[in-house]
Image 1 (cartoon, helix red, strand yellow):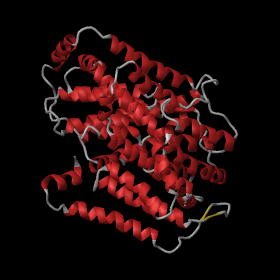
Image 2: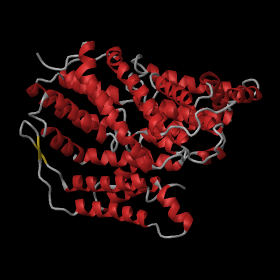
Image 3: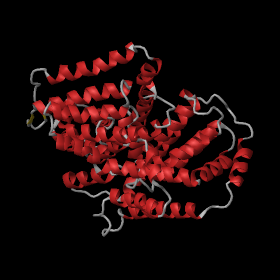
Image 4: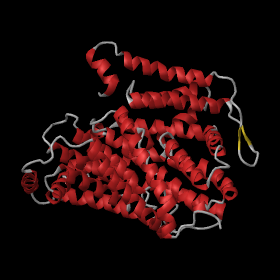
Amino acid sequence: MSGDYGDAVDKGRINWRRLIFLFAGVFLFALVYYSPPWPDAIDPQGKHFVLSKEGKGALAVFLLAGTWWVFEVVPIGVTSLAIGVLQALFLIRPAKVAFKDFMDPSVLFIFASIVIGLVFTKTGLTKRLAYKMLDIVGEKTSMIYLGCFLVTAALTHIMAHTAVAATIYPLLLAIYNLYGEGDKPTKFGKGLFMGMAYVAGAGSIVTLLGAARGAVALGFFNDIVGRNISFFELTYYMFPVGWLMTILLWGLFLVFFKPEKKVIPGLRQKARQLNSELGRITGKEILAAAIVLGCIVTMSLRSFIPALEPIDKTALILISTILFFIFNILTLSDLEEIPWNIILLFAGAMSIGFCLWETEAAKWLAVNWLAMFKEANWFVFVMSIAFFVMVMTNFIMNVAAIAISLPVAFVIAPYLGVAADVILFAALVTAGMPFLLLVGAAPNAIAYDSRQFTPGEFFLMGIPASILLMVVVAFAVAVLWPIMGMPVTIQ
């Protein structure tokens, strides 16, 4: 156990800080749920968006869950269960709907990704990769940071960032074991695992293969604006932004989580020795790698082969889980190693996200926010959209954050002389980097399983990281993308 909840249980005494935030969440829920009806949101065309009783209830659940998640007053998976329970008890959504989200394909995708990481660890592939990496990057902890971040970012160009995080996570555990501090949380451990989660987001914006949000956003753009943006056009504009963020995040973590040890003496030699002790690669390692590679290649080809496009990526990645058991790479006892707390965390995130979406509470928020900037300078308007998506993507699926904001933004844009392209790309950048809450993205939750940091520490680190992200977006919108040829205003 970790965080305030664990402290209270372990020490057998009352933890007042935990109780304060426990009841703060309940108070916020009651305050919003039982408050009088809220005013309609009105878009620039005069259309009214009513916040229904169910929508107000969704916002109430959203506030309670956010408070409990950040301060971990109960295990994060238990907070997720409360999300489903509150929806059912207060008739916000039917129980059948609220709890069905707990087995959404995205949740099963995360499950399958974590199983892949488990297989890499069990077969020994993780240790081989870790020792090879340490042999290359050397003994400086700053270079170990950089090496891990670069590998993570690069892999998200060709596979989903969730699968990348699940694959890299055990590798980082193997590297951290050589740091010499056991399982004890350290600055190096916090930076290594949090940094992996942040960089997985930064790398995932570069291509359409890193996450589903890109394809969804381009679909909206094509339907509303009437122009198609190709795979390579997206990469052309996103590549410099994604890699700039990766390098800047490396610098940020060196500042906030400067490793206790500048150098780990003898690490390279020790890594070589441990690698040689592993012996020749085994048949199970080769089989496991082949299964994973086959799934990754097939999922990647969905973007290029029309016949594969209708097949859901979750079904494809779950094939690997089934094959691991068919070929006895995993056994029934290995299921006990699955971090169900993390699975439940993301299941709850899906449930509250769909709740905000289906009750139209999220749309009400988007219209209210963007309507405030309907007469603003074009640059301020674009940044307001990027900021809204950045905040919302920490609480609801980034696909939903884009879906509620882009249609409204595209309506307002022509009146302000703003080109739709810059709105699309700015929103896509911030949608990929939820740095504040663990529920914002699967890599955040996977990194948390290391027990190197608390949800509160993650949130606090997310503040400077989010500020840095907005600075980079501002630079891209005002300077970089216009130089590269992107239209930002309507002539």
